[in-house]
Amino acid sequence: MGKGASTPYWNGFRTQEFWRFRQAVAMKDQWNETLRCPVCDKTGRASLSQDNGDTPTIQLVPDGFKVVSTRHGPDFYCGVCDVAVKP
Image (cartoon, rainbow, N blue to C red; front, side, top):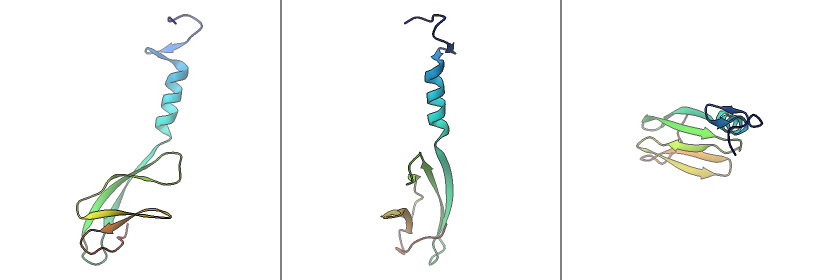
């Protein structure tokens, strides 16, 4: 199908396809959480994101920390002390 008058285009994208893509990108939340171990005081910054679902996705885990899956979603633990960290 060519670039006819019946199919609107914007910068080479079909307008409907562009807005579907734009809406999908806009619906993804991203944030950082500062982590601190209550035992050894190690700190780090984790990156998370969340689509339309309830459970966040871990994008980046700082060195010295690990992710533990729980029924409520992922939790961060100190890799040395093996205790839950405080955000």
